[in-house]
Image (cartoon, rainbow, N blue to C red; front, side):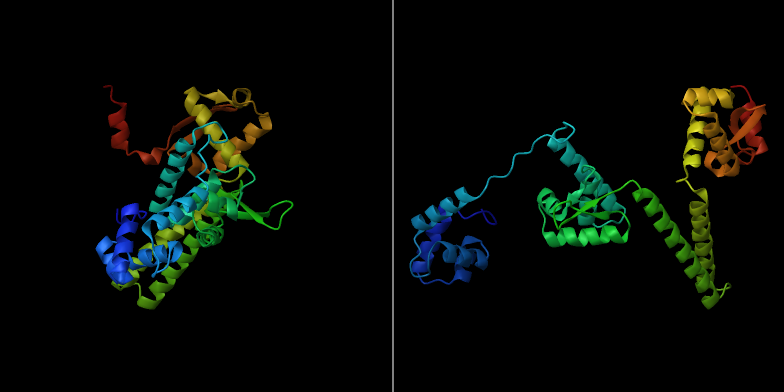
Length: 309
């Protein structure tokens, strides 16, 4: 079929058409094949003056037998079928590509994301993804520019391994935060250039306010702080319990030291935005509960919700 491998019938027709004196381009048109396919076939399996279909087929079959068969897919490291893992990798890469990450870069990223702790070499990535070394190199460069991958020496060799370490999401967060701040500053500069009273100035002003608030919230939330993570766990515990709990009860239920609970509670008080739309309230000595933020509902909404039924 056109575009597939040449068949024995194709080779027979090439031999006949060569005997008729036709050139490669005309033979290709009659076969529905590119000219390069015909010329490569004759160069590999014969000569223009002595191309025999049977001998060409024999040479092609011998060459095909020498090719290594593809390695059968075995189970993944955790015992899951390779097909299931491959389907997951393809799906996640497609979703990441939809966010703007180039398709090949997304595939390399997910391949590293699902690799063992030691990461992968460039050769590993080429083999797993069945792509060229240049594609892998370009994708690694893009991921490094985004601080999503790090290099480590491969012990005992001169190669490097690429991996996604534990700090990747914090670095990505900080990178985005810095970028948002730069966009806000550029937008404010645009307001000065175009004038706040112009349509462009007004749009740039709104843009600067939006990205400025986003940058402030992201840099100020400090979600990477252990105390804030612990604060979120305390919030989840209070929601799950559905009743006020003492600090000691929280420490016992969570298996934490009392000082850790106290630090987490202090983090919630210092950064009330992490509990939004709830508020941490002390209802007695060292006893805490959660209530809705009063500014999230209007008086009329609260009255309507308080009505039975």
